[in-house]
Image (cartoon, rainbow, N blue to C red):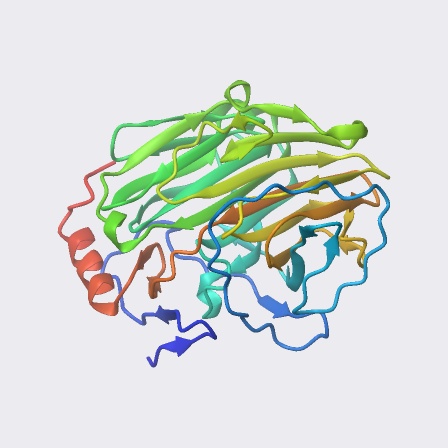
Length: 365
């Protein structure tokens, strides 16, 4: 099919190829996805800033009233501010296997790569599962050319892959898996959670790899809740966990191929936090639950994603208690060719990945 260009000339190809080999639960249709700017028109990509040098960011005055025009930068004192350029929501949900009722809050399979370096975010739950005798989930399937990041909020997920790694991801834990040159894996509810049932909630984030690293050896980072720095925010605003990147001198445990911040926030009702991810990175504020206002704008009720542009700081004020995931990353700015669980740079590379999978190059599980 013809490649579709977005406004920064990145190319996302969705390749219509038959795998030629079946596996349980490996392919699922993504949920309906929509994107709009603040005026309700289709979101378009603005040119990225190329500034990379850090600067001192003054904190916003508490309760500062700001009026932002799309495409302009507001200032408080001498500080630049990021601004909301678009929002996306999941219009409907779908099941991945029989264990993950998900809503796709953004996806490269929509034909865009506007959240670069992040490809896709699936939000599973909240959902109550009854006790069962057989674990629910997704059986063996391949991945190549990117990373998956699983954050468990409620319940437990048991994982295994063709490198021999695996384990149980419990509440607060993170699994950071590098598919790289090709991996097989499976993920199910843990046996303990299956037996007792209960509430289940998690997110899975797909992170792209630059062309130079798509052939990296497969890897697995098992990150427990106890390993993740938790920082109390000023004035009782809440707490922030640093999964990747740095916040207030605290360094997250996740090792990444490109610069990025992954911050897990809990915000208290009526409180606000002023945040300053590194300049040169695009920012996505993922509201999983509750309602927040960015830079004193209109409330955003989760689940939803606000994409920010510009440089400097921004504020997040919680109208209610809120669960927020902040994703900030340096754009890779490379073409993306994607088919199912394979994410490469060209159609030829996708076809080669499928041939490798058919030949058993991803190992066995």
